[in-house]
Image (cartoon, rainbow, N blue to C red; front, top):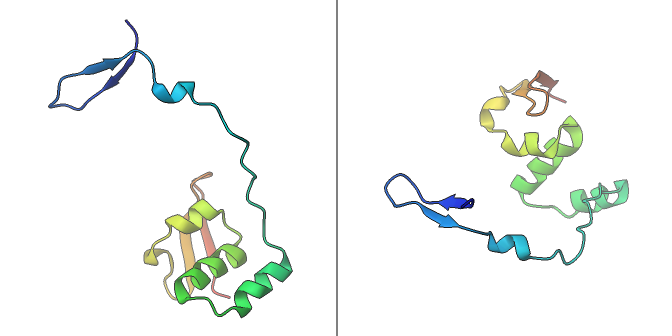
Length: 99
């Protein structure tokens, strides 16, 4: 019997013959996220957003890095003069100078 095994090291193994989620039907296709226009960016910047979202926005907009890379950064990537990080997709070390 083939199936999907559930459990962890200290519990008995349970076998499921089918995955309930496999019978679900997709309702519709998700729309891809679209980049903001310059006008939308200007509105956001002028709205006086809280510091954390503004910082994330500025890093995403002005470093040119992928969203996943920016979201994974910690304070250690910035040394006061430059950003040093390794891109997930290419594993290449990047250095972005402070603007």
